[in-house]
Structures are given as structure tokens and as C-alpha cells.
Image 1: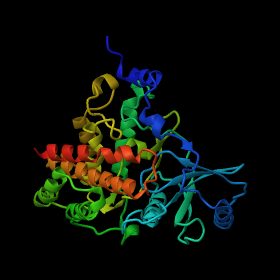
Image 2 (image 1 turned 180 degrees about the horizontal axis):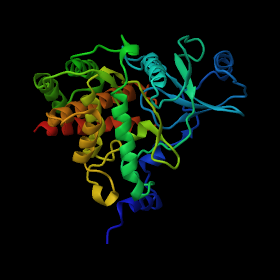
Image 3 (image 1 turned 45 degrees about the horizontal axis):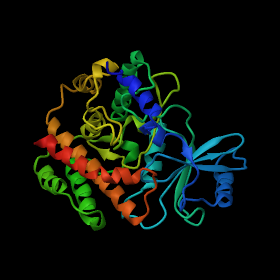
Length: 365
């Protein structure tokens, strides 16, 4: 008799296999090349963080592919610091200033995000621009099957994600004027990621990506909308309450902009087709046995919350989003080859780039 899926993670742990939760959760010693000037940072925090009092202890989060992220601890409080990576970076990448802008606006709108204390653009402090925000305590779930959540509570956790996505897409975009260009989102995104892919010669080319670069702009669905979009809305980019199916904070806003809400939602819904060994995904999982809503039901719930009768052109949305994620992994591959990748598992992600490109093309075929 096969073990239940919720027991398989524990069996893998017993066999010495590292799970995504183990590989990405928590912190580690600051990795070589990513050390901070503790004295300079403490001086900045004393000036800009109310109530700050040292001494300061620093370690680095295991997760995070693009902008190195650190936990800062003092005897009375804990904070999170995100910075641009050291070394050469591509133009327009690692835009932590945009993260600060959108998080600040969303906090004012009542959306669950950490409070930001300040942005430092002076590279003389720690070597690159950075910002400091609250350390939100809770659970980060790296496995989309939610193996450590009781079966009876899984549907409620998925409902919380669905509700947060619908809430985000209903936020008034007026305070974020200039944050993005409303309209023509798919055309601009396909152009952006195609250009980033094509310009990174060191990371190389892929035939499926080359095909998608041609197919996607010729098959953009009609109609347009604008909303605040996260750009990387996955279960591992949010903090859940320790015991309740409630989201305390959504993290990692580097890819956020003003864009089409269906692009954002369909990216989130990619979890239903994503191989779990790449990022948090449900491909191959027995959803009914796990107590997780089906893809169709999840889409219907979002549509009900946002006043839609349904979502057409779903194959395009899937192809677009797998293409976009493949382009992101292609960028990670470039950073690995340049020696500027900030995450311990960046090399593994880089190796999965062609698989994502293949899935993107198969979404159309």
C-alpha cells in the first residue's frame, strides 16, 4: 500500500532527502561575498528605525533568488533587510526601490505586507542600496501540497491565498501612478522578458524559448485591464499565521507593477501544473485526497470574488507565465555563471530553465 502523500515528506526526511521546506526555510550564516558592515548598518538603523538598540546579530535567509535577504536581531526586536546583490547587475533588475514604493502603498490600503522602516540608497553604508522592514513571525510554506497542514484545513489555506489575490487586484491604483504603465501589459511583458533572455548571451539560448519569443506576441488575447500585480504570487512568498489559515504578509515584490490581473492570477494558478521539484507545485498530486480544491474550482472562486463569468484563452496565460518564469530562471543561470547568484540553490534553479521553457511550449501544443 502506497503511503499517503502527506506522509511522503516525512518518509523522505527519514531517508535523508532534503525537502524544499528544509532547503529554503530559516537562515544560515552569511554566505561568502555577502557580508555586511555591521557597524555602519547599526549606525543607519539607529538613525532611521524607531526604538532600535543594539547589539546587532546578522544571518542570511536561505531562500530568495534575486535580492539577498538577511535577518537582523537585537535583544529586543527582529528585522529583515533586503539589498541589491554585489557585483555587476543587468539594467532594471533588482529594483528594491520599487519594492519599497509598492509595499508602502499596499500597507496604507490595508493589504497584508510588512511595515518598512526606510530605504537607503547610499552605497557607502553596506556596499549596495537596501531597505529594512519588520520581521513578521509565522509560517512560510514551500511545498504547495501543504504537507504540515491538516487535511481539513488545507482548503481554507487555499481560500486565503485566493482571497488575497482578489483583494490585491481590487486595490486602488491611483496612489501608484507612475509605478507602471497601464495597458498593453502582455505586449510589454513579452517584450521585456524576451529582450532580457536574448541579451544574456552568457546564459545561452533554448529552442523552445526562441519559439515562444515569436508565438506569444502574435497571440495576445483581446481586451485589457490594469491592477496592482505581484508578479510572483506563490505560497512560499507569503507568511501564514502559525495556527490559522490566515495570511499575515505577502513578500517579495520585486516583480510587481501595474498590469493585467489575469496574468497575475494565472501565474499563481500555475501551481496546479508546476512540477514540485522546480518550485512549489501540484503537478501529479491527488488533490481530492489532499483536500485541495481543483484548478477549475479555484479559478471559479477567484472569478466569483472579482465579478468575472470565467477566463478564456487559458492556454495563452499558461504559456505566457511558464515562459516568463523560464526567463527569470534564465536570468538566475546568468547570475550563477557570473558568480553573483545570492541563493544557495540558484544552480539547481538554473538547471531547470529548459524544463520550464518546454512546459511553456507544451501549454500551447
